[in-house]
Image (tube, rainbow, N blue to C red; front, side, top):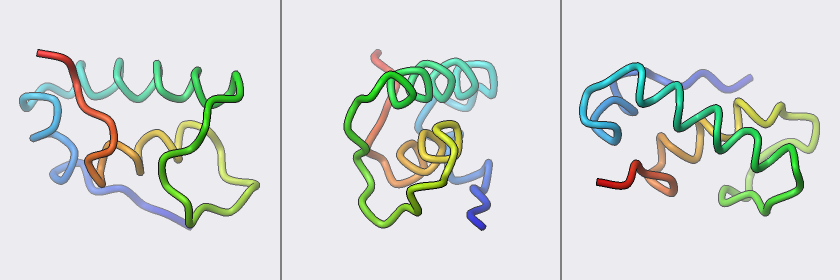
Length: 65
């Protein structure tokens, strides 16, 4: 099971937990609609919200300035 560290993701959203939640939810909706995953080593049964958090943590998804 994958556990994302909050500290690793906050710098990608300017330190805002609110922005992190909004970014993750929008990306999870995209993934649920069939958009391509940006991280490859994910179990097919993994939920879109977990995949979105992982993409944010590794730096594949960022907030627009």
